[in-house]
Image (cartoon, rainbow, N blue to C red; front, top):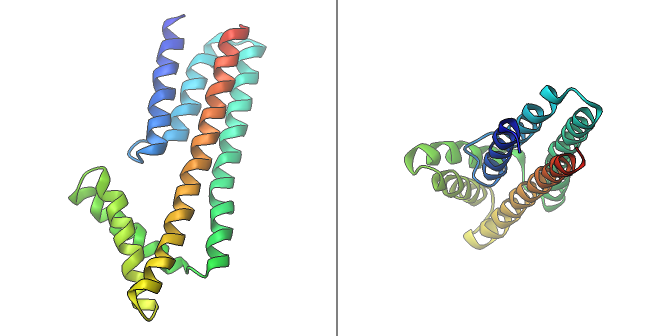
Length: 159
């Protein structure tokens, strides 16, 4: 294995970790890692692997917003609830590093729903819907990242 392949592998592993722990730009690192391996090769295998990895990543990014968003619309969770979660998530990230993002998001969504809905139990049910949608979004992005990684591994094996 060449030095570029090792560097590419490290970037891809960091990218996969960045999807689960949203501190690093996961999909960008994965595509960057594949590009680090593919571009210097300059052959058809490298270009095909890079093209497929980019296509899978782009499709994953589109799906991560479309599919959970449709579920949220059906459950009646408004966009302002998600924005409140996002704002408190960012604040939480700086107050409690790494896990604060998740904790702040949960708190923000729940508080926004508590203001909007009549009681805390109803607000919590609605907040759970929003959290489930975020979970699906992460799973979709992780699946796309793993598929792009599998394409890169296939490229390593082929050539």
